[in-house]
Structures are given as C-alpha cells and as structure tokens.
Amino acid sequence: MSLRTKLLVSLAVVVVLGISLASSAVYRFARNELEASKRRQLTRDAKMLARQTEAWLQISKSNVALWTDLRLVREVALNPGNAASAAEACAFFRRIVEIGGVYQTVNLMGLDAACLASSVPSRIGLKRMQQVVATRFYFKEALAGKAVIAPMFTSASNGRTTIAISAPVFEGAKVIAVIYAIIDMAFFDDVLLKPEEVRSAGRSGILDPKFVESKDATYLKYRDISDIFIRGKKYLPLEIPVPAAEFARESGIIQYHDEKKGDFLAAFHRIREPE
Image (cartoon, rainbow, N blue to C red; front, side):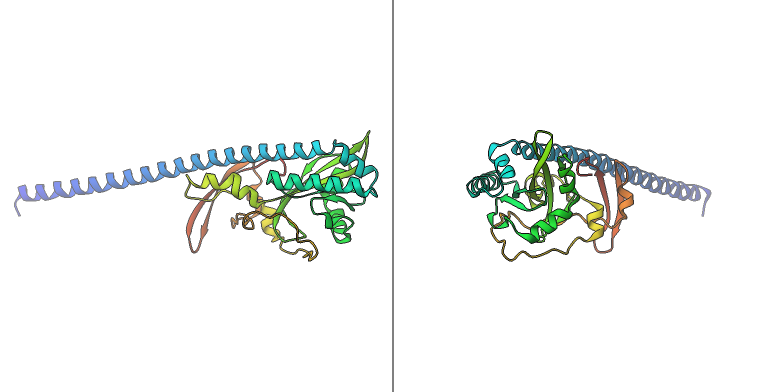
C-alpha cells in the first residue's frame, strides 16, 4: 500500500471516529438537557398543583367554619333533642352535598362525638359512628377550638379514600359541638388533577406517604348507611415505591424503577395542611 493510500485511509478513520465521538457527545448533551428540562417542568408542575390544592382546601375549610355560625346549627348544638331543628339542619347539610358536589357527607357532632344532625339522617345517634369519630385526632383538635383538615384516611362507612374537615361550634368562648365534613378524594381526581393530565404523559395526585405505607384498608361496613352521595371511581393514591423519609423535604424529585414499566421521575411539593 502506498504512502498516499495509507494517509487517505488514516484520514478517513480519523474523520469517521471524529464524527462518531461528536455524535455521541451531542446525544449525551441532548439527553442531559432533555432530562434537565423535564425535571424543571415537573418541579414547576408539582409546585403549581400543590398551591392550587392548598388554596382549594383552605376555601373548603373556611366554608365549614362559616357554617358553625348559622342559627340552625347552634340551635341543634344547644338543644340536641329538638327534632324540628335537627330536621332543618339535616336538610341544609343535604343541600350542601347535593348542590356543591364537593362533600360526601356533612355532620354535626356533639362533644361526645354523637351525631346530632347529618346530610345522612340515619347517622343521628348511630353508636358505631360515634365510636369511630371519637378516636379521630382531628375531632379532638376541633373540640380544643381549632378548625383542621385531616390527612387521607379510609372511610369507616364505605372504604373510600377521604379527608375530613372539622370545625368547632362556639357559644361564647366555649365549644359546644363540631361540624365534621367528609370530602371524597375522587373529587380531586375529577376536578383538580385530571385536567392536568391532558398535557402530561404522567399522572398527578395527592400523595400521603404514611397513608400508602400503612395500607389503610380496613374499615367498618355500615350496612344501614346507604344514602351517601358518591361521585366517580374510588380514588387510588399514587404509589411511589420509596420510603416515606424521602419526602421529608419541602420539595424535590425522586427517581425510581418499575420492573414492568421502566424508570420514572416524580416531582413532589408539600402542602401545609394537611401536611
């Protein structure tokens, strides 16, 4: 082989190798930029959804707190044996559930957690409901005078994923009853989260790592309570297979692997109440 041929072959090899290296570098750069861009987008989306959800929950809590000042609510709280007042309160709560489309049930509870009025009138005086509500920490906080939004839990009546808003009813400085409103998490799927999935390849949701880890699946089936307004399919919380401790920060991104579906990125942003 002549020197000229050797030089030409060597030059061709160098050119091909250079193109390959350049292409590989461009690919890695593009891949890294795409991942960085996706991380930024996920972070923005998570923050936006968290703030949107937080604002909506606070509005819902404000609504419940406003109901505690109503005349009919105070009348039932002060005179729990008055059937006419209880019937009026039940009708009002039922209208809230029917028209608003937000709450699964609205209940007025006495200091001992006995149901005094409800959007489901058959709950009045129901011992099993009283026993369940009396143990809930958010009911106890309302008794102490604080309106609170509970983390996700499994409804004792139907096994659906719910949250509760509890607000104290005052007579002067004294708590005389508690309004206890239940929101079915299916509402969040239908109204807050599904619209976001139209422009995303992933799924949005409210994640409570403690709820997922506890697999809070046991509940009491109240066979005598059938008149509950339930809209949409049962909410299925996001299941991200990482320890709850990974979500301790205010916000962040978690990468995990699913054996069937591959690698995933999940961005999270904490809301303050419920935490």
